[in-house]
Image (cartoon, rainbow, N blue to C red; front, side, top):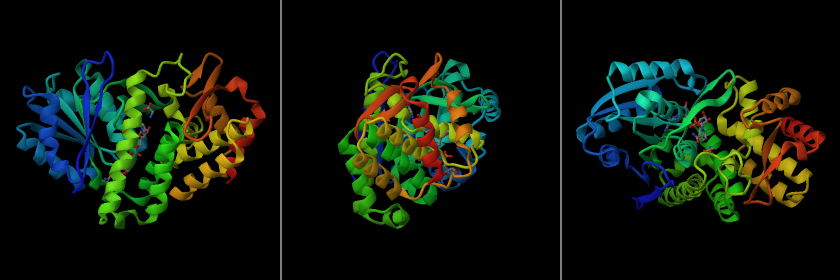
Length: 387
Ligand code: NAD
Ligand code: GLY
């Protein structure tokens, strides 16, 4: 068993700091971990998950919480991005109310980014804020969404437009929960890992490339038997979290005035086109990570076409994206509809919006759309959708 890694997220001015614990087979410690994070006074915990994830891990999670003297209630939401919406949110809030939760109670989110975002938002607004613990069970949620306190639901106005910043009280990451993850979901998370590497540092990008080469994703379930793989995976998750925690600590609220390469906005690399693709396909066709994969290919294309990265860097970047797995086909989507959708996206400020581009691999560059010729955007989006 690998040594447990711990990362503390300390955000200046935030009411609490929190610990992220990353290890193998540590789900049975959830109760003790939650107790440590929320304190001795908390008696009730609402565990939010979905039927599928609860079927795999709910029993262990529940038992562990009960063993730590919590009274546990369970809410199982429907599975899928299309259920990260106001209707399900309202049901969760009604459930909290029925269980008479107060601010001295707590919420535990057991699942991927969908469960985490919705449970986190419900915790943010019920009673003006309940403590919540993230127990991410997808690779994407383990490296990204469970950390940083962004919580939200999707609406017809756009993805994640209705939400709140609400930091968790703790994050427990049991990497062995990934062994039941479908390959397509693992790949979706790995695209996000490539994203983080591309904007974080050449070191993280190379680490991601290296693990993808040595442990091709198609074999990932079998690799869970391999101690070496688990060691490398844990290190990769920890490195991604350390990067994200550093960004969030320096810019928790994603200050729109900031345009430097360490502002939180850089985490949206690939999201301008990615969110638009999700929206125009009604959140049904792509996994979030796949849409981001296509989106960051488009952003890298633009970066190359306006001279920020060389052809060699573009090819290297594309090869690493490709090594995760082939991105879904998108050639029947009209690029004009996608361009129209992102022009109305939440990143719009005034009459323009910002792109997150690359200034070399490992460094992000925030660039105003007005400074990019329209035909370059059009060509980049079209070429990526055609591939
Ligand atoms: P998801 O939550 O839909 O999970 C993907 C699928 O895997 C689901 O069917 C789920 O039931 C299943 N699953 C989860 N864990 C499993 C396991 N261990 N074994 C078997 N099946 C399992 O998708 P996701 O990719 O985790 O999250 C995507 C969401 O995260 C999007 O809504 C996106 O907007 C959000 N997100 C939020 C942030 C943030 O900072 N808050 C960052 C990135 C993404
Ligand atoms: N996933 C983007 C952020 O957390 O800011």
